[in-house]
Length: 263
Image (cartoon, rainbow, N blue to C red; front, side):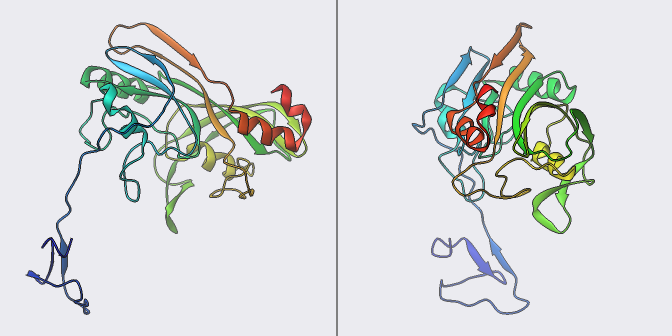
């Protein structure tokens, strides 16, 4: 950027070798590049002229951002006509999954679908159900966590419970063994890292969560978006989709206890 004349110190163009000094004003002109289509395989569960539903693989970032200018879900779907919203880096994206969370997402292909889906999410008319394996000692059979989620005031790279915007998470225990439990989790709201933050806040972090629990060598975050249901925002048809638990998650659960194979 310096070589291209995009950086100035106190209003003057500088050379790359120039060292900044205390109290100097450094200004940089950021060039926003719209994401470009890339050939990245992503399973498409449903598609019509208004929207598509995908089964996002773990390890795939949803949209471009700092440190991820390419290789995202948005890059993978641009050739399929995703569109909607004001952010050129997030065309058609109405909700997100974390990089290491797998499962179902809906993406708009135009402004009518985008606006309708955003409204449905805000009105809590989209049913999103996840499967999570958590540390389980003392976990009740069912429960609700109703606590705001926002940026951690002591570490802005993390989220925290008790600050920020309202957030509600419901859970039911499907099976418990070896100090862990398989949960079905339903979101009412969709804050960043909501499930992970809420479960960690009540003392039952998601298995292998490197941010809000304990990392496990060779294992990824045990969280999968398994069910998605909503009314089509343009043609008003009820839609419901299911995604099988990925094999890597099944294996890691069974290694904890063989009884998890049934779940």
